[in-house]
Amino acid sequence: MPRVTPLFVLSLAASLLMVGVGMIVSILPERVYAASGNLQSVSLIASVFAVSYLLAQVPVGILSDRFGVRIFLVLGYGFCGLSGVIFFTSPSADGIFLGRLIQGIGEAPIWALGPALLSRAYSQSKGRAIGLYNAAIHAGLTLGPLAGLAIGTSGDGSLPFLIFAGLCFAGGMAIFFLLPKEVRQTETGLSGKADPRALLRVMTERRHAVLFAGVLLYGACYGIFVSVLPISLTLLNGFGPQATGVLFFLFYCAISLSQVVAGPLSDRHGRRGFLIGGMGLATLGFGTFFFLPGLWALGPLFVSSLGLGAFCVASIAELNEAVQPGLRGTVSGGYYLFWALGYFSGPQAIGLFGTGAQETGYGVLGVVLLGQAIAMLFFLDGRKRT
Image (cartoon, rainbow, N blue to C red; front, side):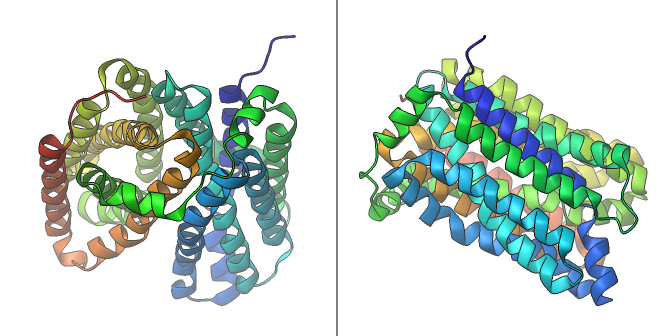
């Protein structure tokens, strides 16, 4: 029997979860609107998730460094499964919000601690491993909506929620039973070294402060892609449901592809070029798409997505290399804390410009991204770390 690897187990579990997420993401707004009758309540679906996801990051990272990563990964999948059960059984909008709160807590360790564990298990090829893991996440998000269409729904539209819960619990069992023994020993053998002040020390170093600023902008771009950008393209370029579906498909595919390619290349050639180049591509896409008519706007946005994926994998690997192995859960929690701050605030910032000045909003975003790329050019050196 072939030996399973940590990368295979973690990627399998994450892709199962994200297939489920992709199945339910389009159903939740309909369920909340039917229960509450107003659009304001629908907007809380994203906000409630973002708040709990954000608040969970640093505590989960610190505790995982103290007690081991595996138990928090299993708990994360368990919390996500519980949220699916709540979605399935709840007839009210309040129940959906409770489920989203629990889902945010559950997804926090899955996004952050998977890369932290992989950086320990694959110390010489962490970029490749993290890239493949994140690609598995986005592949699941890409396949999820297709799976939802294939299975259809039950009479009250609840079946995808139950399947989501089952996939979450299956992912947790895969982590618990299949994670190789030597990896369990490695990650628990680092317990007791966590220090909340370590994250602050890392963040206050100039090169890392610049990098965390880039992570915040990466989160902002990600949040804009999945929230306000489709509405902007509908108003500016006449996008319909099919074109919006193509946008999401290209976004997730580009994120996955670029991480698979950039991860191993950054292991060999260093992270700096992929950090700066990735941010540069994001600048190009967001700064030009609104000049193009119709579906032509998808071209620069695809380029922007490639850049975001390259920046993501290089920045996670770079920050994990900046600390001792016993602090990688903590720094990964800090990484996704900044990502979540951007994810929450980015769409709000674009919204401040209003529907009549959207082009200005995206132009300003392009200028900010360019400034971030220039800052990294000056403040990030090209030294390779292990």
